[in-house]
Image 1 (spheres, rainbow, N blue to C red):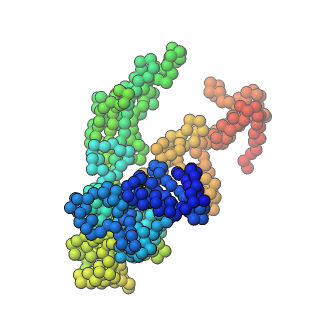
Image 2: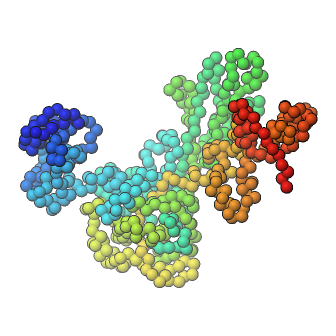
Image 3: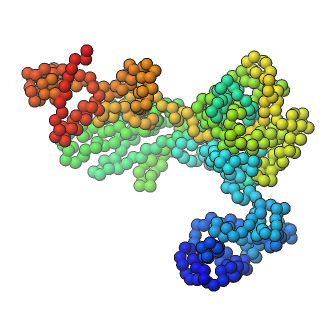
Length: 599
């Protein structure tokens, strides 16, 4: 007796499991039961699993009977003429949907020529096993699966035209490529979904080393290519402010804050504001400039208002450009929020050309950082005078085995010379052997290599260099968003240490290993300087070892325990340590500091 499970729950047993499973599949193909049902018989567990639950991953396959697919040429013609539809094929039992459990008992062929009598199903198209992004990777059947997955993810991180209505949107931190191009080597998926939203450019690539600037996956780019617009993007950053309402009838005010406002900046910060407190379009702003002037009511209302003179001082809550960023004000929108409050939204735009540290990638998972921008006169050139846009390191190829990148470079070369696009769809693209013959007919070596010369010395390289055309993408990770440095800046109110994070103009933390590294290089005084971010002078009573208090009226320190008779000495220490002593006091623990002469 075999157990029968429906969506994981035991519903009964049956004597002849194979006959039962076959009858269910036949009934499903004849349309007698739901085509959402999937069934599988597990011989090892002697159990039948039936699935009808939602959100299962299922894929359509052509049914094969004795090595012959049920989707005949006659049916294909009727499909083209519109006499049949997809639903008709499913209802007639020509195509059926299988989930992962039922796939265990079937044998699927990728191509019709591979069919044998053992096969039960045929793929509609070999590319159907891929997702949309995965199917865009050209010649993906010539690459390891790990690189294939990375190449698919790199396309999701690329900068291009993410939406055709970008002018009417205020998405958070978006990038727009100025000159997107249609790839020379393409997939048939682009014909289905369209090629309006591209995210890369066709470049000439040479695979060689360049003085070590392209080691460790780095790439070298010609300055002339960047000047012509390669990788140039517009970075959009929206800012918004809402005029909130508070209890007691208090509201925010959108205006130019006056000098009596708490937290008032410098007049330079408010220089772009109009009389209504809102910046004007096309203003060129940098970090710290105010976009929307706004003041909020004081924090302490009610009973405290009559006792506090500061309670009537409004607080400056203006919206400023992030520190370290710059740009032009593109749009100013005035609208209402969902609560009916006045809402102001401002979009800023910054044009960014590639710089050292920006990230690039091909469609094959070969991602790397821009390591050097070379003047065009120093770039190597071919015998025919072609200067590559990108120099890619050959060390990234042997271990990763991304053969499809080399095939795409060959395809791009043929396509650019012949003036046509190459079909690089996985399993069914143009054959590399045919492309090599065509390249030979076009007057180039069939292996894609060329004689090249050093742009600095004019000497010919001993080895021939592989040169081709490839589709390269600029990724959203830019050094302008990551770089962080500071000398002086804001500190935390409690610990008096520098604030944390790039957005708060924070400092970079030096830890134990950084300290040891500096000492190892003989820079111990630098360590002293770096570790004094919260340096303070405190007074210590030499008699009781407690912290003394400085009397500003008498201009001298005194000890709360011993009075003015004891000897009090100023010492230099970290404010965090002073805070630690105060916390020990709050726990009722008495500390004693013993002072000794430094020398």
